[in-house]
Length: 143
Image 1: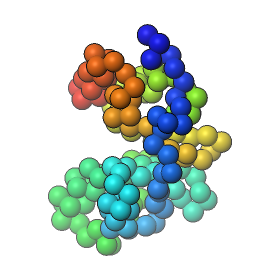
Image 2: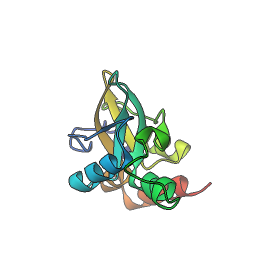
Image 3: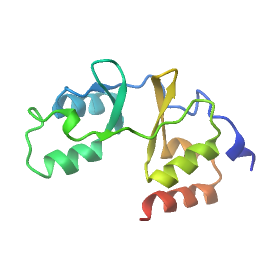
C-alpha cells in the first residue's frame, strides 16, 4: 500500500518534544507530562544522550500504585531503558513493524543523535487505513 511506504514526515512526527533528565524526580516528569499534554517523555543523561523513555503509565504503575513518593523517586528508577527509536525518514511500515515487534505505542524519532520528536500509535493510526490500524493495535496489545 502507498501509505505504508511513505516516508515519515515532519507533520506525522509529534515535534517540539519535551524531555526530562534521568536525575529529575517523577513529580517533575508528571508536571511536564501534564503541562505539555503528552503521554511520554524521552529521558536524557547528563551527557545529553537519550537513555530511556518514561510514560504516564509508568508513573501510575511503578510509583503511584506502589505508594512511592513521586517527589523523592528519580526518573531513572522507572524509565524504560534503551528505547526503540526510528529515524525521521523511515517508512511508516517500519514504524508499524517496530511498534508491533517491541510492543510499544510510541517511538522517539532520532536524527543525528538528537530526539526530534515522537511518533505515537495515534499518529500512525491517522495516516493508515482503518484495517491496518486494527492490525497494529492487535499486534501491540497481544503477548
